Length: 303
Image 1 (cartoon, rainbow, N blue to C red):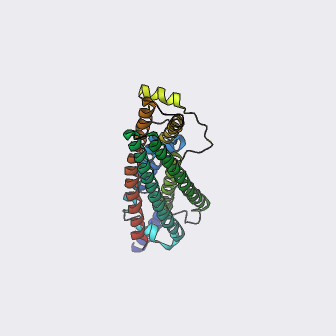
Image 2 (cartoon, rainbow, N blue to C red):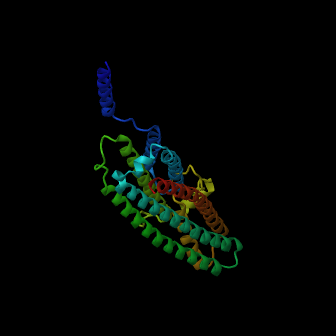
Image 3 (tube, rainbow, N blue to C red):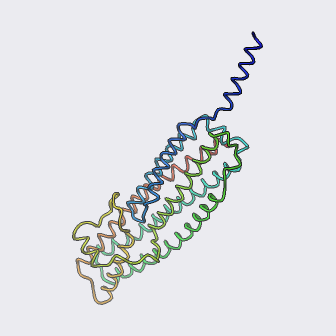
């Protein structure tokens, strides 16, 4: 009887091992947040409203990632030697994303300082020469911003290519949980890269984009009150509006002066841009903390 019982137990054991393991519920939660971001990615634009939506979705995604990394079942998945190549990839990617996020915050701070200086000159109205000098300073800061953004875009493209070239196929296909964890973590990095690329497009719109915003349109929209820094705003780019307004203002100053309405509208556009940048600075600070926390969790697991 004991022999028969042992035989039955052995058969049961074999059957249970052959059954596919179920994905962890937290992995499914990360997938859900990731799918929301995929919808954003297909419709994202270079407007501030779109960027805010992307950062907000990314923050929710990292909350789910933090839950996943703190699950006891995740630790052996990332600490085992079989996934060493991919854990190294995740660690390298995490530190690069932290650096990019930090650089983006510095760019936002730098731009905001120049916007504030220009607004101050327009409000004080100490003379056309003073305003023209600040416009030149702002334009120079925009050139520097575009140069810095170009460097970050190149780095993001390189990261994107590296993620696309790597594969999880060498992992044991029967270990579904390990594959799922590594997959979602890599996809989180890919989503972060996508969001940063959109942010770069906002900070430095592609030069090939046709100029559709002109001063008469800006004036009309300002009178209607439809140009504002709104988190639900999906159209327009505050930088482009300011660039057009400053170009027009500079021409007027060179011809002998600008009217009060033109000054007021330009100042309002700069105010909108300042508010947008300030809000993005706060959002990027929050995202930066999420990235630091994720890297710390990865290091605690792997080391």
